[in-house]
Image (cartoon, rainbow, N blue to C red; front, side, top):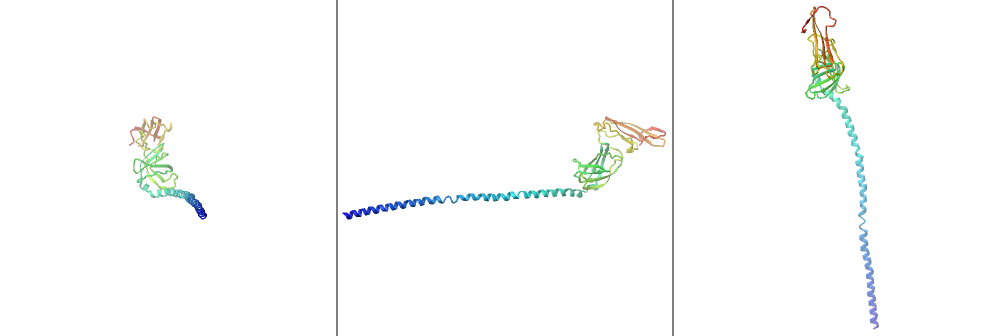
Length: 268
């Protein structure tokens, strides 16, 4: 009986020992299983901060290269603008075959109408030393209208200079043109002028300028004319003209002429 009791006690002791050993081993396995997944996941997260320096490095060359093309464009445009006026006057030769179609002269200035084949640009210049400005007629082809503030009635052949710029730097043409301004100073006023049928010169004409800048100058024009034929067969005239502003102009070739004369009709 003692042997059996001893064997039972030893058996229970072994069973208890095995149970304790198994219990001790189980927590170690669980601890390893739990700690292994906790350590692994944080490793990929720190990769994201490395994107910031790559973005900064990409933006820097973009900001540095932007002002460079701007400087090149501005210098190119300056060079082009400088060379353009030089080429314009050398290529146009229309004034070589130009002619004055008609001209008007009066106390307010003189207007010239040029026929210039191919004219498309404005021009500046001089006529008998007086400043001249020219513009193409927008409604007619090959017609250039030139204006000067001087009254150039008296001579037909006049010296012209044409330039491509207002500073008179690039000369396009220089020469003389027949204008027909030695005969009658025409005007584009509503009624025009009345002139005697007799021989006279620009020095025989007197203009009335009062009141200045009269808005109805040339309106209701009327003239008093006297023709005289002298014993030497010379035919002279005295004429005075008036409009809504008062005295307008006169023509006098009689002046201090002495001798026998008689009234006559127009000299020619």
